[in-house]
Length: 435
Ligand code: LLP
Image (cartoon, rainbow, N blue to C red; front, side):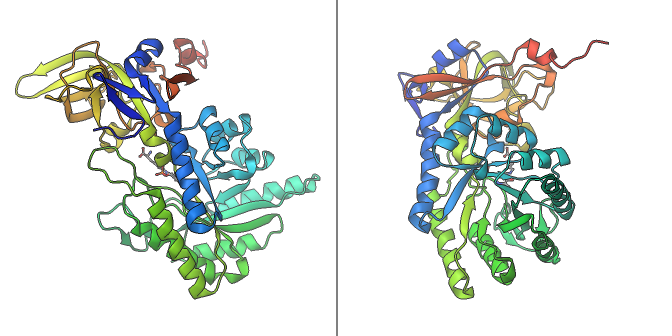
């Protein structure tokens, strides 16, 4: 089962963006992350169009770059007219270095450091999404200091609100989910206090509110309920003139054949209807909407290629297939038990006759990429493809065991570009200091 339209099987070989995966493995070595540019751009456009069609274009798609951050993806986002969400000084710096338009940057984080806030103000980040009162005060202090030194900064901010919707349960629940490290709770009045506090300062422009209810969500209803709660919050605070509503990300993608992602269009249609309905009922203007998809822009447009090493058949127990990567380039199975589709890239047309466990090469028993996986009969030297690894894989990769991180290539209808080079052993030791 292929998880993206970017993938095809031709002559027993897996192609991505019309490029042979065996050729990629040969030319760039493995492990290798491969992304399809056309697929990424199509996803960007689908979101942009869904706002155009359902909400008169009164919105912005901000790619949540924690899913995968590098120059190339910021360039694509910029060309497609997207904004971005950054969550650290590192992501912000990357965006700055590639000249991403700072007015379209949303800076998130539940514990931004003073240095990060200073950097954000220095770069004139469009919107800082304030998480707590300590941060609010720190931000005010540093802007007032800059303004005393001749600057004229009026910083756009949003407040991160906990809408109290837990979308991760089977039937999502709408409770006072105040037990989260992110944002201001509505129930405790904390959110209202934050609004009142922010309004006192001329150096701040409180434009709206933000929330994010979770990730890999397949059901539209939690998003609709959240939009309703957020709209009512806006209506309950008329003096604040909250005119932008950032609803976060979280839309699910196809990892396994039975995953059924929501059509972006459906999502936006339902959200827009609810927002217009509440705006009418409460007699407030429709706010500008911001959405922050991460996984669903990039996730299914990326795959990882590995070379199969040893195969260990343990009679009556299981068969291990070991590959040349693992939890260092994809910690998601070890961390979350995340499941993927696997296939032998150079035998992709053959039936999956074996049930195997895919082991990584890291020195840890839990370093697995999948268990009870259906796979073609693979031999050492074959290329294994893991599908839908575009989101939160490279971005969560590590140098555990001092193994260099893989390269990343971008394919597009037969062409290939390397967008992140493979790390070298020299990179690994580059920060070591000799005693
Ligand atoms: N906006 C905010 C404020 C977020 O915290 C996130 C994700 C997003 C947007 C994007 O959500 P997405 O559309 O990608 O679901 N490491 C985990 C995922 C953590 C998501 C954290 N926040 C994983 O590998 O599944």
